[in-house]
Length: 331
Ligand SMILES: C=C1C[C@]23C[C@@]1(O)CC[C@H]2[C@@]12CC[C@H](O)[C@@](C)(C(=O)O1)[C@H]2[C@@H]3C(=O)O
Ligand SMILES: O=C(O)CCC(=O)C(=O)O
Ligand SMILES: [Fe+2]
Image (cartoon, rainbow, N blue to C red; front, top):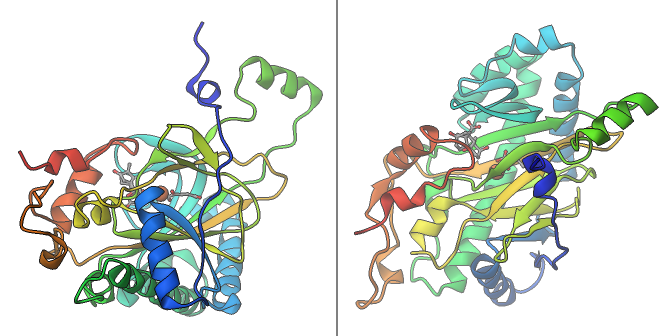
């Protein structure tokens, strides 16, 4: 009898993930960031400038929210797409071992979602706005460094998209409850069913946006898939941010960068895992295509030009693990 997927896909491999120190010289960091985007689509940043306060305040508000009873939390859901969600991910039947809050990054939308999430909506929306402002700055700094590293005449061509007031960026707070305590009997049963330690928390996928700024507490779970298809566990580092290249950036660099496939394993720790992701996206009507000065006359565009709205619509019509960029390949 074949093993369930969770057990079959157990193979993992430890790999050195590039760490970029943003306090080093721009020439050095811009070069290292471009290399990391090309080889991994993933890297870690330290000395990132996001204040500990902004992080701790949001984490506290979120832990307070997730610590409530199920009926209390359900009042803030279902996430359609914004608000509270439990287990169901997206509109097409994907399921994970987690709870989450999804918010649009626009202040008016943050205020609206906060009213359903919190009994103190002003305090909640204040800390969300502060966090979003801070990580947006970090995202823009990284995108400017990419522009410099690629020697683009307009180094802000990418960051301008997420600085735009119409930017469609999103904030997600994922909560993976602490593992349930096992009795001897339940341990025996779950080991027989091969399911005890390898369940999926948030299934394999790439993020559709330009880039993702991810931070988690000190509980592990995140894994990335590198070239050989093996899953690489990412060591949690609450003082750092992890940067993930998304599909839109892959298209805007004509595949010079490749979006990274990743997943989060279900929590096996006695402590809950919390991850916070800022998904930096362009305005809905923005065209996703390489900047003209990035392309040489001999270069062929690998994708038909498409808008972020068109790409998002395609992503939301598919399952989490489905790849989507091929739908926009130039013939
Ligand atoms: C199954 C889905 C969930 C998702 C929308 C989708 O149809 C495919 C992309 C998924 C994803 C992954 C990254 C982010 O977590 C997210 C908010 C996004 O923009 O695309 C989720 C979507 C979601 O959970 O709604
Ligand atoms: O929770 C995590 O660490 C990863 C979640 C993720 O990839 C996502 O929400 O898109
Ligand atoms: Fe993701």
